[in-house]
Image (cartoon, rainbow, N blue to C red; front, side, top):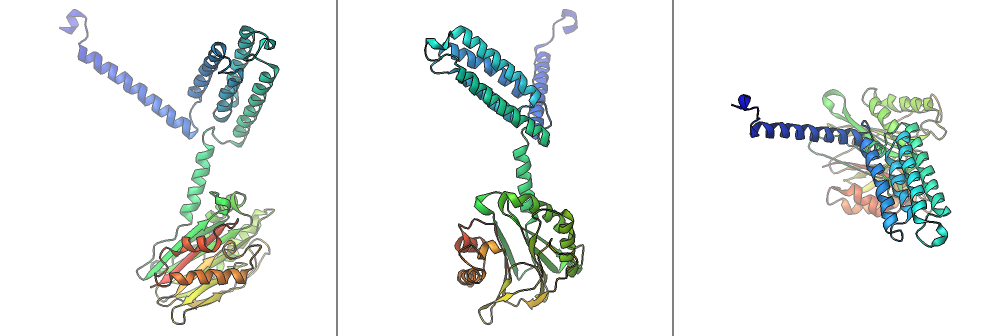
Amino acid sequence: MAGRTGKEPPSARLRRIHKALHRARTLLRRSAVDYFRGHGSDWVVLVTLLLSVPALAWATLTAPLWAAPEALVLPLIVGGLLLRPISLLAVYAAAAGALVVESVLLGPYADGAGRVTPGTVLVVSAVGFVGLLIAQFRTRVGVPWTGGGTMLFDLRERLRVQSQLPSLPKGWHREMSLRPAGGQSFSGDFVVAARTGPERRTLEVVLTDVSGKGMDAGSRALLLSGAFGGLLGSLPPHAFLPAANAYLLRQDWEEGFATSIHLVLDLDSGDYELFSAGHPPALQLSAGSGRWEEKSAGGPLLGVYDGVEFHPVKGRLRAGDVLMLFTDGLVETSERDLADGIDRLTGAAETYVATGFRGAAWHLIEKVAKDVNDDRALVLISRS
């Protein structure tokens, strides 16, 4: 019947319209996802900003006292943050044209407020120049126009994931806390850990403090954490720090040294070895005596001397014992030396003996070094 009359049934038209809307919605969503990943075109932002320029010019012409000519800097700022340089030039051309139109229609600036003055031109030009520099810098670095924040977030999350401690068998407890300097997202302290050996019955933990702090050391800490994570478990324990030292020397950084402490713990017997590279000593609480004992293994800083050896100190964790590894930011400041800081840390740790040190790592940093402008890290291993 439809073929004889030449008319399409309403249901077919609705299906066709529905398919067209679905394709448009899919295309828009895909473009948005690609854009925010940094892989798509910036045409959506470009068109939006180009339309905003005449809208702002119209607002200035109708209400110049409320919508000043300087409002044209708004699309320039957004364009500098989101657009490529070539697209940004189109917005600049539109803004320049809008300034000319406003200047002609509003009249000479000597006639009163709300006119285009030389200062207006200078402000808009200065903002445009800065926006162009930002856009060119992003293009030169190679970071997508919306991907810089995402990239930094991914880097921070990778460092956090790499610093997680593996789960331990029944009878063992582990926890860790990292606090960057100044409340920043990146830290020069990091942890790499793995279960190694036959049947994964050995726990290896490496706590490292890269020279510098916060954002300055974060990029180097990320690079070293990946390298150290690859070395851990791939080499015998006694060969880890020499390999890490050789790797750091090859980087030839201007400020390239680091301190590190490497724990190798047998999860069956509780026997352990500690290798140190210029790191503060570990602290062990003996449940039998109730005393804290420093476990210090001598060794030079990483990235300073070639061909050095690292000799371990040995110990054993019995039932109720606790071992703490930490960086110098937790115990040493300009007003407090290392010995006083260790005394303060052990004194604060006494209050968590009854609770088995559950949740103690974060609270100990809060108690001992809450307002210290340095990276702080603390690792706790206890045997129940």
